[in-house]
Structure formats: C-alpha cells, structure tokens
Amino acid sequence: MRDSERRRDRRFLVILLIVSLLMVTVYSREGDKGLIHRLQRFSMDAVSPLQRGVVKLVRPLREGLDRLTGLAGASRERDRLKEENERLRDQLLEMERLRRRNEELQSMVEYVESHREWEFLAADVIGSNADNWKDTRQIGVGYADGVERFMAVLDERGNLVGRVTECTAHTSLVLLITDKQCSFGAKLERNGEAGLIKGEGEGVIRLELINQDAEVNRDDLVVTSGMGGTCPPGITIGTVREISELRTDLSRGIIVSPLAALSRLERVLVIVSPRPAGAPLPVGE
Amino acid sequence: MHRRLAFLAMLVASFLVQTTLAPELSIAGVKPDFILVVTVCFAVFEGPGRGAAFGFWGGFLEDMVSNAVMGVSSLTKVVVGYLAGELKNRMVSSTVLLPVLVVFLFSVLNELLKFLVWVAIGWDGRPAFRFSVIAGMALYDALITVVVYPLVRRLVEHEEEVTLFK
Image 1 (cartoon, rainbow over the protein chains, first blue to last red):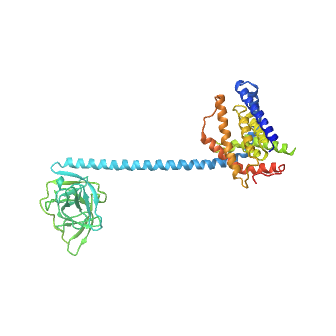
Image 2: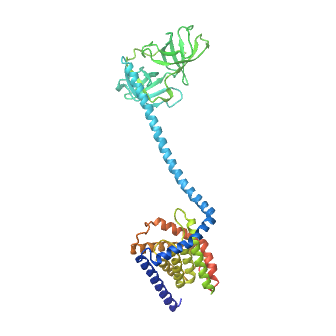
C-alpha cells in the first residue's frame, strides 16, 4: 500500500471516528424528543413491517432451531431430574428402612414388655453362613454379654429363630430352626399334642408328633413345648402348611412354615433367662 | 461503478439480514452480527479505508434501528473495519479457517469496545456485561463466516486483481 493511500485512509478513519463520536455526544445530550432520537424511532417503525414479513417466512427455520436448542435444554433438564430422582429414591429407601427398623424395635419392646418373666438380650445379625450347607446367622453378642450355648433366639416379634451353638466373647453363631441339625420340643397350640420340630433344610421345618393319630389341621399354630429345657414353652414357631400320608417309619410328614422371616433377619432377641437347663434334643434320622 | 454497487449491495443485504433474519436465528438469546462479519470480510479484501467506510455505514444503519446510543456501533465498526483492512495482503490462506478466526477476534473486540463506550458516556440503559454472551456471539459470527466469506469474495473478486486468502 502506498504511503499516500495510507495517509488518506488514516484521515478518513479520523473523520469517521469524529462523526461517530459527534453522534454519540449529540444523542447523549439531547432528550427523548431530540432529532436523532426521533429519527431512530422513525427508522424502527419503517423496518418493523419488513421484520414481520421475514418472521413469517423464517418461522419454520426458527421452530427447527428452537427444537434443537430445546432438545439440548431438555437433555440437561432430564439429567438434573434423573439425579434428583435418584437422590429422592435413596431418601425414600432410607426412610423405609428406618420405618421398618422402628417397627421392629417397637415389636421387640412390646414382646419384651409382655414377657417380663424372661430376660432378653437384643442383638444385631452381623453375618450369615458363607456356604450353602448350614443355616446359621452370626449375631453381635457373645459370652461377655451373658450369652451361652443352647440359648433360644427369637425374632423381633417373638417367633422362634433358632438357638445359639457357638459363643465367642462378642459374637455368637445361631443355628436356625430350618437347619437339619436343629430340633426343638414343640406342640400344637390348639390341642397340646406334643412332638419335635426338626429342620429339613431349604427353609422347611417338619413336625413329628408323639401321637401319630393326633388330629392335625392345616394352619394349626405350632409352639415350643419346653421339652428338653433349652427353650421356654409357648414360643410361636410356625403354622402347619402341609400334612402328608404315613411315611415308611410310620410317622406323618407335617410341614410347618416358620413365622420368623429367617431370610431377612436384622435384629434378634436372645433369651438369657431362664438359662438352658440342658443340651438340645438329639436329632434323629 | 461496480465496486460501489458491490459495496452498496453488501451493505443493504447485511443490514436487512441483520434486522430481519438475525433475531430469528438467536440461540440461547445470542444472535449473530451479520454486519460485523461482512465488514471484516469486506475489509480484508478492500483495505482499511473502505473497510472503515463499510463499518461506519453498517454501524450507522444498525444504530438507526436499535434503541441503543446512536453512533456507538458506527464508532466500533469503523475501528474494526479499519483494523481488519490492515490485514489486506498480510494474510495468505487457502481455507476459510483464518477468516473465521479473524472474525471471532474482531467480534470480541467490537463488543468490548461497545461496552467501553457505554461505560465512558455513562449510559444508563447498558446491559450487564457478560463475557459468555460475547464469546457466544463471537462463536456464532465465526460460524456464519464460513458462508459469508465466500459470498463476499465472489462479489469483490471481480474488481481485485490480487486475490487474498488464496
């Protein structure tokens, strides 16, 4: 670029800047009714029909753009709502867990209150058996807390869960009533017919009555008889679910559904008094 | 004569597109500045003098139909047009990428200058300064340069013996 051209451009620039600054100054100093303000308003009016026409023409394009930007916004909103939903769901689950816990504790208190003649020790279930061969639960109290072998363990509503088989200082192992090695003296609450309940594994309990001709009906309540001395009488065990024909050993197969929810035990009661008077009844085949 | 016609055609076209189409193309409240984009593209082909002239008239027309302070857009676009024109014969590019970058930078400069003037004169109606809007606008301007730049080049190349950005 030649120097003369450059000088001309610079002069031109200065002139344009001065004109622009003059416009700014005049506009800033004149009122709303000033010439430039009125000229501006007039121009805006003049252009507006043109704008309206174009708006009609490009409306489909505008709507397309809105959809695109709306989609981005909707995606953000969806993510936010998703997070909030997860947070609320967690809160709800926590509330539900606390409500259930509260109910359990209340049941426990009510049960303990209604059996003042016995002494209980509440314990958390802290573990389960790692293999598939034993139905056991580990609880968070041991001999340091007054727990002994063969003590009966109940759920929060006072239904029989099993008995303590091993004790360490602060933990104990509870053999569930469904385990094949577990047996308790039991009777039918309706007519007092006595017998034994034995675990059959896989969540099943079998009742063997001494009197093979005793009347048994479905839904009969089975409670502990106190026989053997490891468990006080009258503790609910379950209800008769199934009565089969005589087996080869001439006993009847009476299947009992446990009342305790053994698969989801969280807190249990150990009967620490009366203490077990002897060893559990042997489990015969 | 043809050069003046091209100048006028681009000026009127960019003004009409800016006043009618640009508001309809706003994304998240940000609309492109067609006049600025054409000013920069025109200036890099035509030099500082004509670039400043284009910026002045483009800004003037913009001011006429806006409710902002009259003369501010003229002022800032004169500066942008002149500086962009200074790049004439200094940029060699076979792609549109360099003009896109140049438009982006001048777009940011234009908006910063506007705010500077508004603050300097103490205009009560000035909007809140948000760099995100300026950056968005500069990005949008850079984006439409991809379309505008070849159009401007086609119009001015009839008169230019030396083609820039080529």
